[in-house]
Length: 97
Image (cartoon, rainbow, N blue to C red; front, side, top):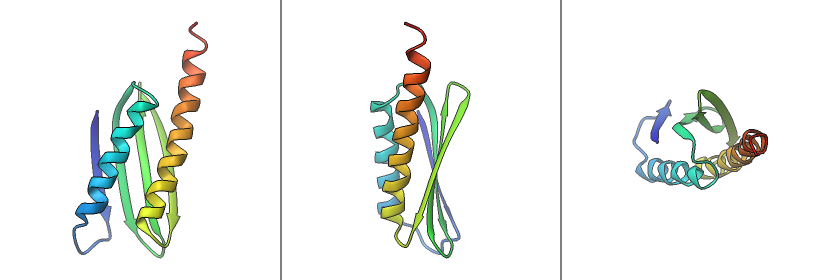
Protein backbone atom coordinates (compact mmCIF):
# COMPACT_ATOMS: atom_id res chain seq x y z
CA UNK A 1 0.00 0.00 0.00
CA UNK A 2 1.34 3.39 -1.03
CA UNK A 3 0.70 6.40 1.20
CA UNK A 4 1.13 10.01 0.08
CA UNK A 5 0.94 12.96 2.47
CA UNK A 6 0.50 16.48 1.09
CA UNK A 7 0.53 19.84 2.88
CA UNK A 8 -1.24 22.75 1.16
CA UNK A 9 -0.84 26.41 2.15
CA UNK A 10 1.91 25.69 4.69
CA UNK A 11 5.11 27.65 5.29
CA UNK A 12 6.87 24.97 7.32
CA UNK A 13 7.20 21.20 7.63
CA UNK A 14 5.20 19.25 10.18
CA UNK A 15 6.98 15.93 10.83
CA UNK A 16 4.62 14.96 13.68
CA UNK A 17 1.49 15.40 11.52
CA UNK A 18 3.22 13.55 8.68
CA UNK A 19 4.10 10.53 10.84
CA UNK A 20 0.62 10.50 12.46
CA UNK A 21 -0.96 10.46 8.99
CA UNK A 22 1.28 7.55 7.92
CA UNK A 23 0.45 5.58 11.10
CA UNK A 24 -3.30 6.14 10.78
CA UNK A 25 -3.24 5.21 7.08
CA UNK A 26 -1.37 1.98 7.85
CA UNK A 27 -4.04 1.23 10.45
CA UNK A 28 -6.73 1.19 7.70
CA UNK A 29 -5.47 -2.23 6.55
CA UNK A 30 -6.85 -3.71 9.78
CA UNK A 31 -10.32 -2.94 8.44
CA UNK A 32 -9.76 -3.80 4.77
CA UNK A 33 -6.84 -5.61 3.09
CA UNK A 34 -7.66 -4.57 -0.48
CA UNK A 35 -6.39 -0.97 -0.15
CA UNK A 36 -4.12 0.04 -3.04
CA UNK A 37 -3.15 3.55 -1.94
CA UNK A 38 -3.97 6.30 0.54
CA UNK A 39 -3.59 10.03 -0.04
CA UNK A 40 -3.72 12.31 2.99
CA UNK A 41 -4.04 16.02 2.40
CA UNK A 42 -3.63 18.73 5.04
CA UNK A 43 -5.12 22.06 3.94
CA UNK A 44 -4.38 25.18 5.99
CA UNK A 45 -7.34 27.51 5.32
CA UNK A 46 -9.65 29.32 7.73
CA UNK A 47 -10.21 25.84 9.14
CA UNK A 48 -7.65 23.06 9.42
CA UNK A 49 -8.89 20.53 6.86
CA UNK A 50 -7.74 16.92 6.52
CA UNK A 51 -8.85 14.78 3.56
CA UNK A 52 -8.31 11.07 3.02
CA UNK A 53 -8.57 9.54 -0.45
CA UNK A 54 -8.37 5.75 -0.40
CA UNK A 55 -8.19 3.62 -3.55
CA UNK A 56 -9.76 0.18 -3.11
CA UNK A 57 -9.98 -2.14 -6.13
CA UNK A 58 -10.36 0.73 -8.63
CA UNK A 59 -12.91 2.48 -6.41
CA UNK A 60 -12.21 5.72 -4.56
CA UNK A 61 -13.38 6.41 -1.02
CA UNK A 62 -13.07 9.93 0.37
CA UNK A 63 -13.48 11.46 3.79
CA UNK A 64 -12.68 14.87 5.16
CA UNK A 65 -13.02 16.81 8.37
CA UNK A 66 -12.27 20.35 9.44
CA UNK A 67 -11.77 21.98 12.80
CA UNK A 68 -9.46 24.46 14.48
CA UNK A 69 -6.77 21.80 15.05
CA UNK A 70 -5.10 19.44 12.55
CA UNK A 71 -4.87 16.53 15.00
CA UNK A 72 -8.59 16.75 15.72
CA UNK A 73 -9.40 16.94 11.99
CA UNK A 74 -7.06 14.01 11.28
CA UNK A 75 -8.81 11.76 13.79
CA UNK A 76 -12.32 12.80 12.70
CA UNK A 77 -11.50 12.15 9.03
CA UNK A 78 -9.91 8.79 9.86
CA UNK A 79 -13.00 7.75 11.86
CA UNK A 80 -15.17 8.61 8.85
CA UNK A 81 -12.88 6.61 6.57
CA UNK A 82 -12.93 3.57 8.88
CA UNK A 83 -16.75 3.61 8.76
CA UNK A 84 -16.61 3.72 4.95
CA UNK A 85 -14.05 0.90 4.78
CA UNK A 86 -16.11 -1.40 7.01
CA UNK A 87 -19.26 -0.58 5.04
CA UNK A 88 -17.43 -1.23 1.75
CA UNK A 89 -16.12 -4.56 3.04
CA UNK A 90 -19.57 -5.63 4.25
CA UNK A 91 -21.20 -4.61 0.98
CA UNK A 92 -18.65 -6.37 -1.26
CA UNK A 93 -17.84 -9.51 0.69
CA UNK A 94 -21.25 -10.49 2.07
CA UNK A 95 -22.51 -10.93 -1.49
CA UNK A 96 -19.74 -13.40 -2.34
CA UNK A 97 -20.58 -16.00 0.32
